[in-house]
Length: 173
Image 1 (tube, rainbow, N blue to C red):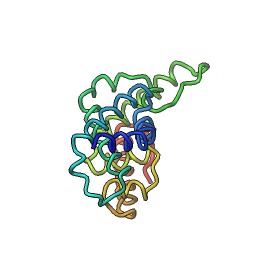
Image 2 (image 1 turned 45 degrees about the horizontal axis):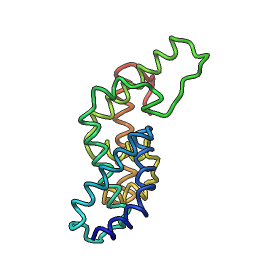
Image 3 (image 1 turned 90 degrees about the vertical axis):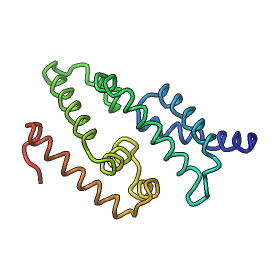
């Protein structure tokens, strides 16, 4: 079993690490979470029943590992720099007022996303941060592609409404 798991690790670790990097935006954290993902997969390998692709199963473990990390480090993450959370680097010539507004908006968006229901939050994170297509999100979450699109649309409307109520956006379509 050990040599089989080594083969699985060698084949899928770079893809899982890339997936986690898209979620967290930090190479070192992605590597750490990849190790934890494969540790959890090794402990649970006997539960893999082949009903989905092995990568999908590993990605589900990776997503859960990442969300567990987020819950554990929530306070630290909310204080992170914008570039670490969103992969956006502020323009050096940007006015301090603009940078402050962007940070305030970023914090409001993060708070709004964390308040979404689990299924909405999962779809938003996978679509926006992991940049997955709806077909992959559907397979990943065990739902139809149309359901993933509907959930994303509803989550987006909830986020827009909350940001409007806080005065960050003017109109919600």
